Amino acid sequence: MNLNALPTVKAGELQIVTSDFDARPMSYVSSDGRSGYEPELTRVICQKLSLKPVWHNTPMAEFYTRLQTGNYDVIWFNQAITPERQQWVNFTRPYGLFDEAVLVRQDSPIQGVKDLAGVRVGGLADSTNIALVDSFPGAIPVPFPGSDKVLPEMLAALRSGEIDALIDDELVLVVAAEEDPNLRLGFTLPTRVPFAIGVGKQQPELLQALNQALQETLRDGTMAQLWAEWIPWKPFPF
Image 1 (cartoon, rainbow, N blue to C red):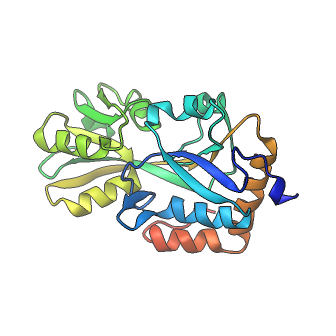
Image 2: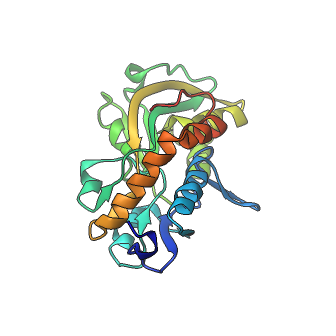
């Protein structure tokens, strides 16, 4: 494949729909720029494809409609593969399998799903996380709009008692619990959700190129090295 001929919106660049939402260790933005497991993997993949990554902070609720405008190439930010999203995009092979978890206040009696009956469980609106709450008997889902400040907003709601529990990706909540002694991880849900890159359905060549590059990073050990650097407490899933 001629990489110079990859059909991206701007020649030599990969226009990425993403968010500045602090989802460390997966992704975050600091004074030093964008970092975490996903951005570092993005740079490796783009280098293999002779592309420069260009990130665009976008409201999460607009990820899939923005991609349809033709101004962007991919969605690359904590995107679980779901049937609903597959109506909008084609996903690459996964670059990680991730569990979900429930965060509670340190004095909460919540230890498992059965303890969530009658409990207000906050989560990101229109996410796989909040959708999972509907499967918990008696739990009351409390969706939060997906701004790039939504995690601090949800954590503040948990601390103040506006919600009783918070569901999100385990990786994000492990960090939140470590940073605040008043919060603890209530329990983990071993969902092993696959995360991947969403590519416009009109870009099969780009999809193929991204898959080839991801496969190379898996084969040469780069993906495992980045996982070990950013997510050392979880076994590499591939």
